[in-house]
Image (cartoon, rainbow, N blue to C red; front, side, top):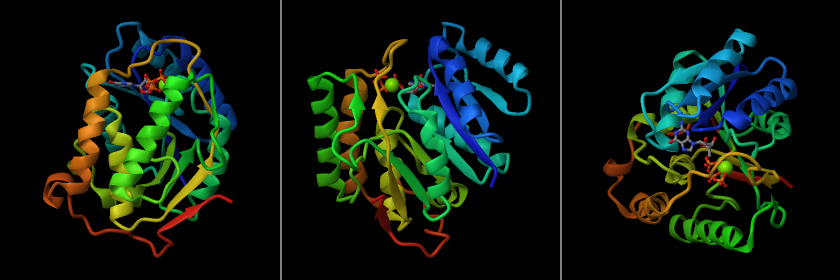
Length: 255
Ligand SMILES: Nc1nc2c(ncn2[C@@H]2O[C@H](COP(=O)(O)OP(=O)(O)OP(=O)(O)O)[C@@H](O)[C@H]2O)c(=O)[nH]1
Ligand SMILES: [Mg+2]
């Protein structure tokens, strides 16, 4: 299966080289698409330099301006689907998502429609978060589960592996989130369309370098957005494209 990691970046100059080298080393043969929103710190130029160094394995999609993580992923996924990849991985570029988990996730996607890297399958697996950040994440996850009724332990994570058929089934045209709500929206749409969701345990490491893009607007979008996803009429949040392509269990969690 042809696999690609879609890596959105905004001011990740300090992390980019390290993360792409670790990805390429972790999975020989995997490709990477960096989706940069014209980062003022020169991340886009560094990405081009890396694409030249690792020709045929790293590609760069430059976007004109910062429009949020969700928009960057939609553009990256479209690009990758148009280039015939079978499996698309999404991960942060700040080394919070360890490339060592790519192999187990790619293995797991053989039997699921989407695999979620989960921080909470076995207790709490986050490194370097203060209590406030941990509470925010746990509350967000609980809130999402209460509202959406999705049977997943980590509904807000951003390390995922998709089969192309799942993304095609969800329909990228109907994805409305710009910020972190994107993570919930995508998983919810997969769940609601009946796709088989697997969870793989991961340890999440808070970034050492660079700055977080989290802000109040993003949190508000997520709070309202989850209600919208759950209760707004289907036509507002979903594009009908035919549901699951494979006969698989609706949900399974790694033992
Ligand atoms: N292209 C693009 N990438 C973005 C945008 N916002 C965030 N990112 C990237 O998305 C990933 C996750 O963003 P972070 O700022 O690390 O968000 P976070 O993980 O919630 O925050 P921290 O815990 O502080 O790291 C990183 O690779 C960012 O560079 C955006 O508007 N455009
Ligand atoms: Mg981060």
